[in-house]
Image (cartoon, rainbow, N blue to C red; front, top):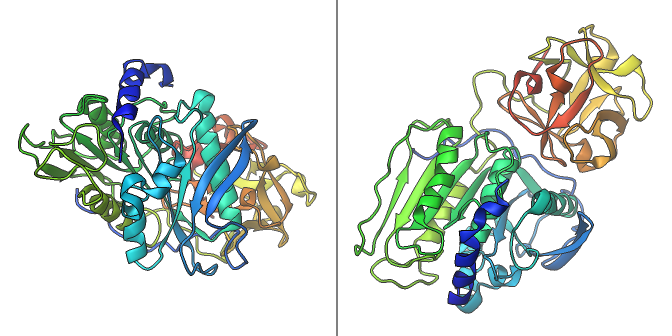
Length: 445
C-alpha cells in the first residue's frame, strides 16, 4: 500500500505541479477484436522485467503475461502506473498486500476471469512521471509497440490505471492517446504530467477522497470535467459522501456519447489513497475500488465504441476507394507508382488500381495486392508522411478503421490525415494527432 513517505513527497510536488502542465454503462460494441503482429506465433516476451531505449534513454517495465497464454487469443492490456517514489515492482508485486493488490487489485480479478489480461508496470524516471517534452508518453508508445509485436493483444482493449503521480500520467495518456486507450482509471490524480491534446473522448473513471491533503479532490474534479466535456456528458455536481460518513458514492454521468461513459467515485475515510475501505480511515486490498475499476474496464469487452449510424467500420476483405470527407477526393498512390516509398496523396476519384484499398484481417490496407499503406520509417511524430511499402506485418502498416470515420495508425496511435486540411489534387497524406476533423474522416467510395 501507499506509504506516508511517498505522500509527503507528492505533497511537495503537488505545490509545484503546474511545472509539468503542458451514465449508464456503455453499450458493448460488436466491433471485432483487432489482433496484433504477435498473434498466432510463439511469444517473444514473457513475464518479468524488460527494457528498451526510448527518447535516447534506457527505460524498463515489468510484464505480467497470463498463465496458459494462448497466442491465438487477443488479450486485454492494462497499464498500472506507480506513484511518486514508488516503483514498477510496487505495482506488480502488490507491496505489503502481495498478489491480492497486484496492479491495484486488478490482476487477481483478471485471473478469476480466466486469464483475460496482460499487465504492464512501467518504471518512471526518478520514480516519477514528469513527462518532460512528452518523453513518458513516447515511452508508452514504445512499450505498446514492443508488446504488440511479441504478444497477442486486442488493440481495442488497451487501458491505463494509476495512483497519484501515476494517475496524472494516466490522465496525460487519455489526453494524448485517445485513439489508443479505450478507458482509463485515475486514482487521486492531478494535472502533473501535462495534457497534450485533451479534446477527444475517452471512457474515464476518477476516484478521489474528500480528505485528500496531498492532491485535493478539486484537482481530481478538474481532470474528470475534461472528459465530461469531451464525452458529451450532461454537466452535473455528482454527490459526494459527508465528512465522517466513512462511505463512498459512485456516480455514472448521464447523456455521455455511446461508448464513452464518465464515472466519478468519491470517498470519505482514507485520505490520499487508492484502496480505501468503508467504515474506517484504513486501507487494504479488500477495498471496493478494485471491483469498481474492473467493472468499468470490462464493460467494453468485444471492441471499440458502439458504431455510429454512419460511416460504418469496414469489414476485412473489402476492396474499394477511400474518400476523404473534407476533400471529396480519394486516397491515391502518387503517379500510380508501385515502388516502395511512393507517397500517398489525395486525387480525384477515378476507380484506378492505385486508389483501390483492401482491408485485411490483420489490419493492413493493401494496394496492388502486395503493397501496404505504411507510416514512413515507423515514426510517430505529427506530419510523418504515409507511403506504400512491401507488406511486412509491422505495426507501422496496421490501421484501425473506427466507427467515426477516422483511421488510426496502430503503431503511432495517430490518425490518417490530409495535410493542412487541403483539398487540392496532390495534397499529401500524413499522420497527425487525432482530432476528428473532416480531413481525418474517410468513407468507402
